[in-house]
Length: 528
Figure 1 (tube, rainbow, N blue to C red):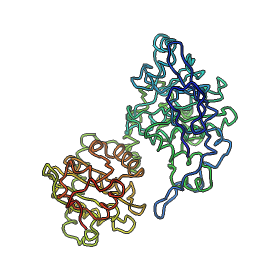
Figure 2: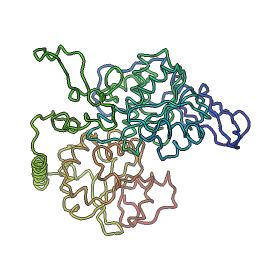
Figure 3: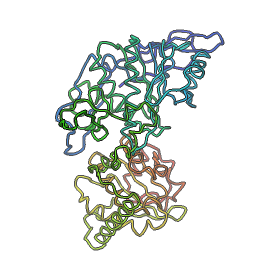
Figure 4: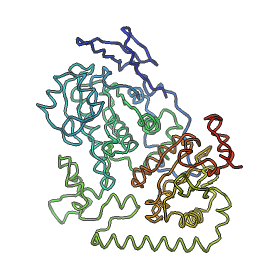
């Protein structure tokens, strides 16, 4: 897939960069503002499909048939572009900001500065505020765009993630509806969800792409060009997810059956959770199934802090947490303090049972693989645990015994501070454990494992490990997020561990030398 980057050099002539046409405009104050023609951006339909994603062994599809079929008309309307949205001459561009319309970040400040004092006056003196999930429309003033749609993305809380997803959905949906009302033909979206507000980038991308896809299915003739403007980590995420919602080939359609989430929302793309809806009827004798309309408190109360967001308003335990753990809502809620103590006791008892098994069962079939072992200490005297990804054959290993061996090896070491080095060097899909198993292991381990872990280094990471690590530490293990680090080579570990304390397979150092060279290596840094 081709991403276009407009040049920032100040040349007075028309520029063509990767098929993108841009020209310079000199403002009266001497500010050089480059304009990128939205019609010169390559559309999704003509981008080259990347290699088909590798599915896990014996995958189970989430959907029997592809939820989204190849649609050449849709694909010819869409662009994925890495650049500065303030340079686009689209009819309308989107500005993601906060409730006070004064988000303190480079993007907002640049947009308002380029638009000129008129926009600043209108936002701060006339409009003044905007609620989460809502939009306000202004002229583009000195920008190349005719309109600017200002919208406020939600803050993310995993306990109430459905409310956050709905708010983000409405940011995109109301922007699209506004574009239709204003007879806008070209529209450019920035990434509305913000990591600063805690919103996971991949989940935000799912909402954005799904909402636009559903909208085009209902209003395909209105908009002629929709541009997703992405930068940073969002580039890789959108590259991966774009073919799932807008497939170009039958192969991409097939992959979407496995890689798209089960819940794809309603016909508008809005997340639909039955437990979050209250059905209201006039006659209490009416059958439940006869009611066609429902009132969703989270969407009816137009406020950034909605009563429908809290589990208490549902008069049951937190629904999102139960869904995350795979359970059903419990309508008889115990005292929170008692429930917490009971849960902690049950967790400790479960761990103690596993520890007893780990000390008594024969685990030689797992220990003999050699994928998990201790090797020396770091410069602070903390034990270093090594995990070799290439030797962990997820589909072949007895996972129950793998968990027991993990507990057997680590239990005496994690009573104090410790460090883990995970080598992802030359791994394949057969070495990738499922997120469900990783979550199970993490939830089984006692608190001391998380508390005393001082650093978790991922050596030779790939895009897969970066995305999966980010997802896991955001959703499942936020308390260790700051402890996880990706490093491109073995030599980056020498600041925390002496080479003579590091015992790793020879293939790792050989691979490292091919990508980082010989200059980093010291005697004793590898073992055969």
